Length: 236
Length: 300
Image (tube, rainbow over all chains, first blue to last red; front, side, top):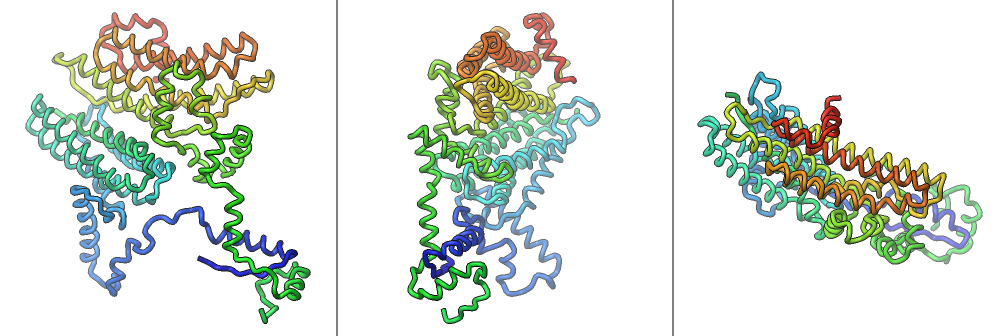
């Protein structure tokens, strides 16, 4: 808290007003401070007391991969820890999104009206969808920061990507009724998992009376992705 | 205060400075106190909300103060998402049941139009139509040997274009028309653009359950639910917009109301015809010319 002491008399008011104008600029009380100031993403390595400049590239890559893998574990076992929120990154979401979009390709390759989503459509739906959900939760008054929310929504696609891999494997065996039922169960389970995991991370940042308003778009988002996975039909 | 030549002091206030010199024991004001004072003078947002509900005259003044944020700032849009779960729920119910209240905007929206409902209702409707249309086509063709299932993902784009343009362009046109008529004939009730958008967005909510019903491949049930949804959402819109135009010439007001109805019918029948068209030709004669008109629209 900045304490400015001013000596004024009755006619010294213009000066006071000038200082008030100044204080409006420098001390913004109305805007809540967000994010995690004490631990920026790079601080974990700096805390150890050595520079990352002279370490082998392999260590750098492995450390980041380990961080990404660590977050995957957090999504698979969504207890209410802040680990996914604290050090956000967008590598994991990018990886998952590209994997999912690639796996959704290779429907009826050559025909024009195969009807399945194209790579770009999947990409745009995932990134625009999470962007709009994030904006929505910010506009509703959520306290989570912009990239934290993007990170959580992106990482929570992972159950659905796993479901996509399972669906591809099941489809190798044929596309009869049994295979459809298996795929339906897998997609429904992973859809529920994704929604549950993301709300476990996101819902706490919302005011109590608006949680449903924030959870509903997340539900719709994963539902659409689940629909894309379920309706995927490979080339014959 | 020994050093009177402080470089940070404002030089133009010579008189004040000399006064400061003379009276050493003048009142000391902490800047935090002043901020407290300013805070007390400017009411918080919650208080504004309460006042809005409590006092109409005061609300008019304060709502003007609320709109201070410029349109490119984040705060400007935040006020369109200032709703709670129960408000959204009551607005959806109010937009479905016309007999619950006479005027949707007057009763549910007044002075706090939100964009949350319109946006997410439209998004839900887009995906509901694309997915249900696809499912119904699958059910109709189930068992026929030469049918190969496709996801028809392109229909999402068409549905999104149709629904979002309906939910934004029609309110824009209505708002412009009301503004123009207001300059000629004095109307007692005026609506802002956001209020009209809000009313239109919520009026689409009845179509979501209707569209889900359309999965069942029975033409009778489909037309029944189309007409039911049309009556409900259309009557809510009519009851809402009638007070705004009723003081005008009778011809203008009737034209205005019929335009609302015709656009609503076009939308509903267009959904039915384009996304849930049966393959068999005899069923297409049901809706005569409207079908051809709407079906030709997406190709342009």
